[in-house]
Length: 299
Image 1 (tube, rainbow, N blue to C red):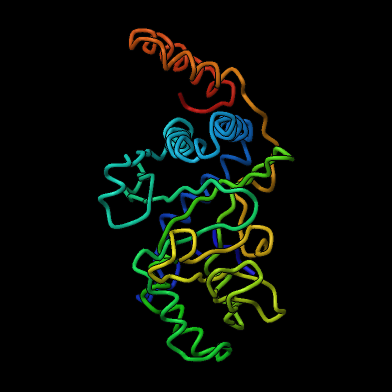
Image 2 (spheres, rainbow, N blue to C red; image 1 turned 180 degrees about the vertical axis):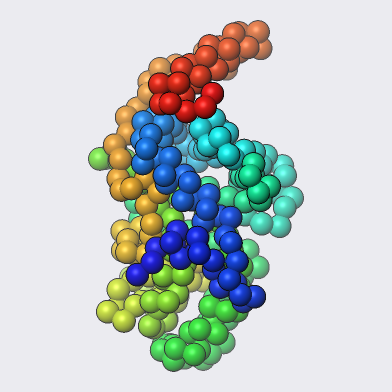
């Protein structure tokens, strides 16, 4: 079976025929870079997850900045821009980073997620359409392949599939991380049943769970009513339970380490002057050039 990268590199069926997929090309290039120069991603992910020493949620926001800079520094045929939070709140989509191909001028909006190895939100379904759509069939199980296909072709699911989600997944105790991309094409093709799970067993709201022909978990749609918060609605999956429906950009789990010097740098930088920041930035720029030279990359 083809992976998302293989499937989309040859073109994805978007309803209008086969066409080149800029996102898949970017993922393929990123995966190739990581396979050839693993130290670059290990170093960056180590720095990102070190931010959890500062705060449990700090790594998520700083991860957006770090990955945007990673693309700018090490992927010579791409540029990237972090979308500021003010603009983020004003825009109609969920993306955090804009990636620009310097070859084709394609602009690829990315939504970065930094989650532990477990539940992973793929879409907030901010208009609360997915759950009501599944409820509208008036049954607790949907097994008809034509009905399942129509659900995946519906606007709410088409919009979710169009999101470019780049999840940074970590196992804190083991100090391992992975960049896992959910394979929508494989998951949707494999879905044999969509079943409603009622309230209970730790659930405040009912969910609709998608499973394959062997009864294995793929993903789920959570409740989207007025009493639901952002973590109780939308399209979710689970990195452990749905592992077969992910592609690893890092070619599996990689070990990371804490960079305590970085924590100290942040602490002192927050008390330093702009002139001190300029001097530090010059030293860091030189370090990045040396790093790229040591890896044989253009600098």
